Length: 147
Image (cartoon, rainbow, N blue to C red; front, side, top):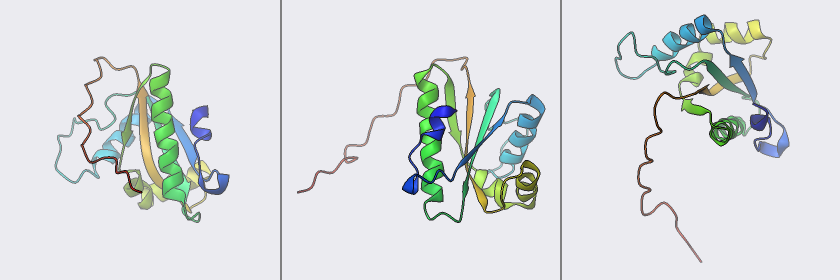
């Protein structure tokens, strides 16, 4: 978690916030809520958080011009830091949709977070019960050198 607080942010203003949830019932509720924003029909028992014991939600202040980049930077650092200490992680989308909803706005208020904050993404953390899959091959034109 501390590594995420050192993620680069526009002008070093540190606009993001990291919300930590470890209550299993709360994670289950968030899982169902997140699943409701899937663009396709998925089974009711599908868990977009993969049974993780810790759910992180990254929010950022939409009044900052770089809030999406700032929050994304925090998400990337959290995922890499987790891997570095042997913890499994996965970046999960749909936080934007969640916190744009009335329910999301009510949660922000309940948590004491200003209404200008928007959902950027989630990270789930835990110890995987399987080996990590091999990464897909990198596309050949990923890097372009120019003069």
